[in-house]
Image (cartoon, rainbow, N blue to C red; front, side):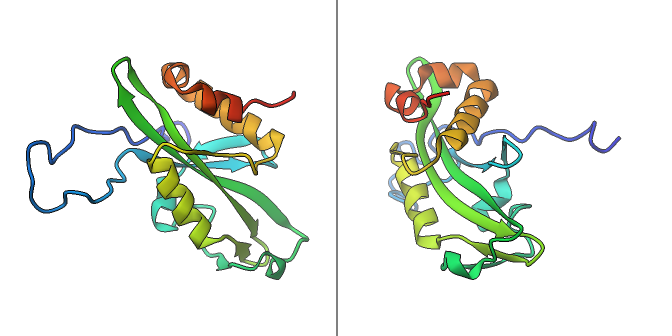
Length: 173
């Protein structure tokens, strides 16, 4: 019964700028209201949003001790994930996927060890906010899972997205 009532977590949608016409405190700071963390589980061939990743507290990251050195994570039992920072923006026609920055994560749940590069996460989040597309280091299977998720999540967002994003996620099926 609990699974039936599970709420669909959605993309953070941008609001009207709270500082329109206001030149005081907060001008020039970044707003994270229009960015969402999308996880790509390569093994399970699924993608999902987990807003806990905004603070390093997603379901996947809980109870895992992370290292910036991938070689410290035992290969046996390790699972590859991509944390993809997806930015939604607005143009005249409507909302669209504006920026995408993918970051590799390896989690070994039985050993409670994992790999992630915090500088990469911060830089790719920042670039996603600035409308950049960073997915060229992803494998084709992961790109396909991500593109299918984005298309199925909201066809209109996908339709209005740039050709650059669509071609970057294009795979040879």
